Image (cartoon, rainbow, N blue to C red; front, side, top):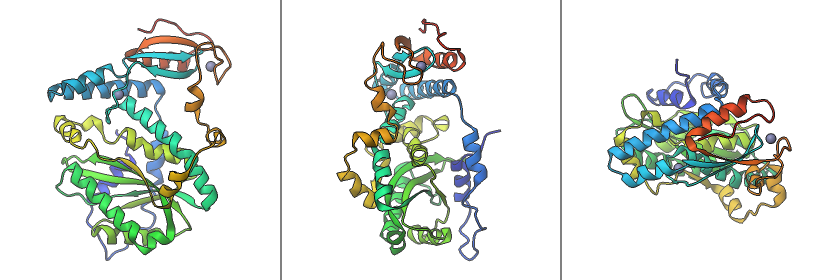
Length: 344
Ligand SMILES: [Zn+2]
Ligand SMILES: [Zn+2]
């Protein structure tokens, strides 16, 4: 059976009529069952790599069908040849021959979300320290309407702007980041959610925020709010919608066509005081080290360097992108130092 995700639960709740007379049942916003099932549902790296390949094949087929030859070609070339720096048991760095930078490409999406994490995590840590705020993960939803993706995104962003102008928001929040998530229900209706990392000044009752969101949207009361215990995990959770903005499995030719029309739509941004803070923030080397910026550490690694995880020398393995899942599989199950070198 398919595991319910936070999105599917929120989407099904979007469909419920607003009962403004009756107070919603206490704590319905904090569905521990859902968040737990999400964390239990971790897949291995090889499974995820295989899924990325399938997604890309699916997208390429759709692009060919639409006559988008250039896009199809780019998707096919992206990450098709890899240089993998490995000790045999760990992968220190993967350098692709080519990156397509297409927004729905799962490989490029991963790189993009890693870039965002490396960029914002030091700023977030510093902001929390200086401003004495608590990070929360807030999901805002809206009722469904017959509209296209663009209209749906504009509606929720406009409502969020209204929310930020309200006294309540100014009193309790000091800015944060937002990202858009698109889903579609079985009837083909768009559901757009805003995932927000909000920096909370002090505690408030969730029902107050629910009322404020209802006032900003006119008809939506479904929100989700959870305190973020670890900011690195919280940020990773939110930027994953930048790498995976929608459910590609249900993605058809029409969806791709519509998505291509969204070219310049922003999917991630900062707001409020945190936005201003980021403008002036220059991370020092200490900040990067403090948050474990593996990306910048890995950038300097070359063949012959010691593996950061086990100190064994690294060697450069050339393979096709299609060979990566199998390589992960072997790395995941191999004893020290035993790994083949033919991965084509
Ligand atoms: Zn790509
Ligand atoms: Zn190693």
